[in-house]
Image 1 (spheres, rainbow, N blue to C red):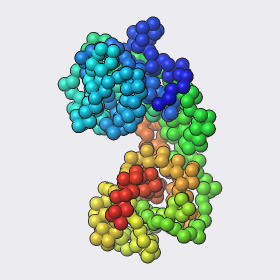
Image 2: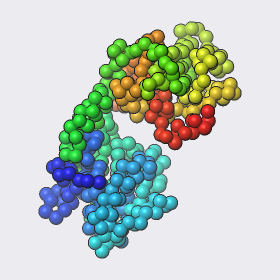
Image 3: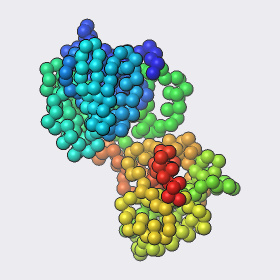
Image 4: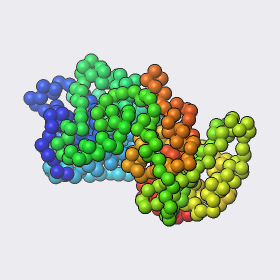
Amino acid sequence: MRFHDFSAPQLTALTWWCDGSPYRGRDAIICDGAVRSGKTVCMGLGFFLWAMQAFDGQAFGLCGKTVVSLRRNVVDVLLPVLREIGFEIREKRSVGRLEMDWGGHSNVFHLFGGRDESSAALIQGVTFAGVLLDEVALMPRSFTEQAVARCSVEGSRIFFNCNPDGPQHWFYREWICRADERNALYVHFRMEDNPGLERAVVERYGRMFSGVFYRRFVLGEWVAAEGRVYDFFDRSFVEPVPEGPFERWVISCDYGTANPASFGLWGRCGGTWFRVKEYYFDSRREGRQKTDSEYVEDLLALAGGREIECVVADPSAASFIIALRRAGLCVVGAKNEVLSGIRQTAEALKERRIVLCEGCGDSLREMELYSWQGAESGVDAPKKENDHAMDDIRYFVTTVLNAAPRTMSALAVAR
């Protein structure tokens, strides 16, 4: 990694614990703000330098949403830098541990994933001289509080970083709003605070995000999700079905019995996926419910004899998935993280990697109506209405369009 000159917030995150720093007496640091602002790298580098300079023979915690994301965001980025400045590092992947020697000191760093409430049990009983929590706003409160409680060695410190969420989020209310009370240093980052980020990249991020995601990820604000989910979408995003030829075909499904069922037929042409046709059945409007076998017949009619690579379905629709497989179709369980999926779908629409075609009336209707619950709800979630085509589109984006190469290889084998 090549470092440019540090901005003032980056330098603070890197050196706040040093002799002569006006913040040396603080017990914690909180770095939040825009994506790609350099907060994770600078705070993480500062964490390792502080730990190895201040302690010998101690244990530290490194925490992320998952161990995989922690390695991707922090460990794999910083280990080459640390080795370059003289750290000797032994990585014990099987037990999630890093052993480091530097400046005559030796310490151990344990890796933890704070995925859900049960994760707090993983960290109980350990004593730390310090802990770093990467993406702390994605972790449950119980895990974070357990990690903080483990820091009982004299002189221990806590390093937090995250991208903003909603203003009702527990971390914003309990730590950022009470930073002085908790003797924590709060450092807010803007995208412009990363001198190594070219202006063209900053402008590209501005085009990629919209609405709440723009305000959070680009402006670095803790704001509530309000209004339309896809507030940028209008009829300029709608195109006629291209003449083809199409290279691949996929169907995405949101299954419903009492609620509407929505299926989308996607064809890939010239590097873009087009939603060329769709099926939508509202049992309340029609006055009757359909069976799984009837839905399978409707899906096959939507396919129209085309070679369907796979059907992407909500994994909770167990009986429907069984019926699809009995019909000889390859079925893939959809990735179903709602907020991440909405963000990815918005990016895909704005970048024209997916296009909704004329004739897909129900998905176009829902695009105009799909809305957030609003600030008064205190949660970041869309309303559970006008969301069935929205869900099947999101399943397609997260599971097929943005699939990792390994996942796509698995689909090819299943085919």
